[in-house]
Every structure is written in structure tokens, then in C-alpha cells.
Length: 98
Image 1 (cartoon, rainbow, N blue to C red):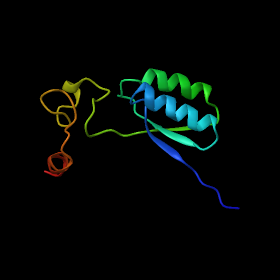
Image 2 (image 1 turned 180 degrees about the vertical axis):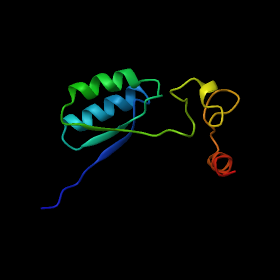
Image 3 (image 1 turned 180 degrees about the horizontal axis):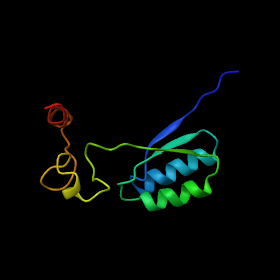
Image 4 (image 1 turned 90 degrees about the vertical axis):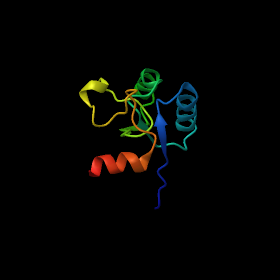
């Protein structure tokens, strides 16, 4: 028997994304979601994940266009002057490489 596993990205990004994840899981199409710990609606997503026992939850590693979970001064090599991760993947990749 073949199975399809459907995973949602950006769980915790917003209440609308969280609503969609919950609805899709309850309707039976969504198997798992990646949780963005530094996202604005993460507390809501964690609360929903605890209720949605059939939803597998993994961590979404965010290194671009977001905020770190740690204070920016603890990860200065990963953030821009505004305390956020870079929005430019090439610049970020080059900075990591060099």
C-alpha cells in the first residue's frame, strides 16, 4: 500500500496559517507541520499542536527573513544590524562560507 504524507510549512507564522494547518489536519489531508519557534504566532501553534494529537510536528530551521529565538547579541554573526536574519540568501550564504 502506498501512503502520502503531507507536511505544512511555517506553522506559527500567523494565526491564518495556524488555522489552515488545524483545518487541514482535522479534515484528514495534513499529516505534519514544521513549527517556526521565532514566529509571531508560535504560542498559538504550540497550543494547537498539543490538541491535535494526529499532527506530527517538527522544527522549522529559520535562518533567513525572521528573528532569532536567542537575543541578537548572542548570535551576532547570524543577524543584520536590525537584529533580524538577512533577507538575501546569497549574502547570508557568502557570510557563512567566508
